[in-house]
Structure formats: structure tokens, C-alpha cells
Length: 128
Image (cartoon, helix red, strand yellow):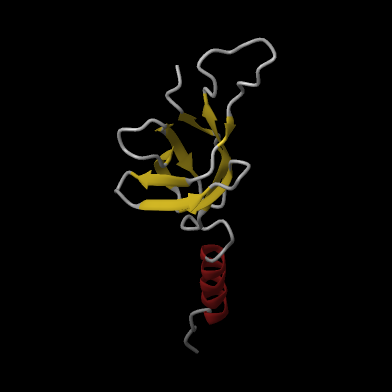
């Protein structure tokens, strides 16, 4: 009697492969970059008792990937932002008009699949 290939084992291995490929931590899952944006300095000269701490900045946050892809979100009135992007390396900056001030300070970031990166950003007001 000829032996038949064990179909059950083959199907089980195929099912395990497909299940592992569709897990929640698949390499293509987006990661999240979040944080706060602050603008400063806020006073030309800091006087005694004067509040010159950096202030929350509200506006566009832009993440540019190595391949040139651009992802954007907006920070809220408290300066908080959250942005989902594919895994990879990015330059992230608070979007300001070219030639400012104010001028967003770029930050390099590496985002992993299904990971969360906390990255606070700065905007230079140009006040001196």
C-alpha cells in the first residue's frame, strides 16, 4: 500500500505560518510618535518674578521619512500631539513658515512597528 503525504501536518504548518504573519506585531504595523511642543524663549530679558518659561505651541507637526514621505498632525492648545507613521527613520519638526522666526527645531526619530516613541519638540521664537 503506497504511503500518502501527511496532509494534516502540512495544513497545520501552513495555518501556523499564516497566523504568525497576521499577528498584532507585524513589521508593517504603524508606530506612534507623541509628545509636546514648546516655544521659547518668551521674554527678551528675564526680569525678577517674570514668567519666561517656554509656552505650549499649537500648529502642524510634520514627520518626513527617508524616502520623502510626509505625515502630518496638529498639536493642541497644550502643545500635545500624536502621530501614527509606518516603521522607519524620520525627521520630525513643528511646522513653521520658512525663514521664520519662529523656527521649528528638527529632531531625528526611529519608529518601530506597534511601538510608541515620546518626543518633545521645540520652536525657537527668535526672541533675544
